[in-house]
Image 1 (cartoon, helix red, strand yellow):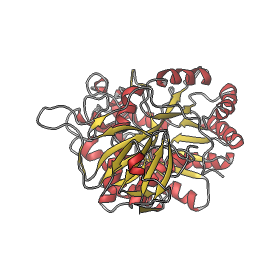
Image 2 (tube, one colour):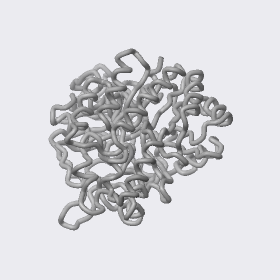
Image 3 (cartoon, one colour):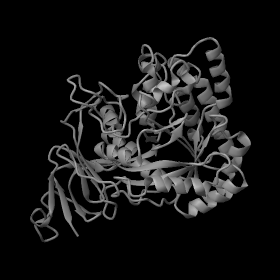
Length: 478
């Protein structure tokens, strides 16, 4: 097998950091060694096929993004990243594993919807991938399918309290799915917004002639997220099932989740970089139609109300467990513009799969979280949460050789430069939601299962390198 030796770096995990050399043997981590260790009786630098100098840099596990939407049909169009373009962008940003969502719509067999997503991804991914299953219609057939999918390594199911007529499930359907999850050990993921109330607010806003992108945010107020989060927690408690609330943006909703966790309930929450940095006033409320670039659900929240600061605090306290991206990109031209004159028709989604490690690392630089917490939020906990903890998100012997060498002295400029030389991201989009962001750090080398995907500012990956991952049950459920 090919040997790769990463020397001189500081290995960072969720519980600490240390100077260590990392030896990769083929597709697995073989050993972590003290610098200059000769206990193996051989000069590893002389026998390794590849030697990477990580002096002055951090060596961390490859990032795990457990919430992406490649090629997702939405609002009369589809997410602009394919599995090929989206996973290539992920690799550029140090993410070596994604978990995407297969989508079942009402009236469609769950197994057929899953087969369609396998067909989209197979042979096209640059990094390893798994699937969650969206249940667009909870009935006897889909409940039986939940058991079948768990046996096949798909151990998490997403439900929606939003989007009536598209993905929405009522409380009875949610309860039945949670009861099934309680028996088969799967994890229910919840989009927690009161979609019925939101639809009323949207109709009323449009009747008043309020059509600009900013009204997407004001018609999805924090009360609709907090109420739905509380209701989801109560239903999960009634069913005796675990719960994972996705893309949390409102501080009040996270406070509700934190209280349940303090009481010992088996509930978890994730947030995304857009909710940590962007706001209703500055981005969603941009002049003209520009705010459409930042339309996503749940929506960006008010900076004046300090939602962003509170979410960082909840990341520090552990009440928010994961930072994902909810990567669901749409181009501004022809896609976001479907909502010209009617904010409710703007496709919901922001591209970010390439930038998560950098954006969360900036929180380390700014003193908001620790270096170890960065790795925990972006690598280790997502892997453990979704049944990949024995292979992904850690640098231990036997784990997959997914490694990122990160340079804290480097610099990353996100977005589009002003000199006309082209875009500085690799997602299949005609704009950047992060244009103008400057990061005090840089992804230097990205390795997936022992193969160097990114090094020296060049991409060495290819479609088909990524493999499908059968997942076990979450390591956090009880």
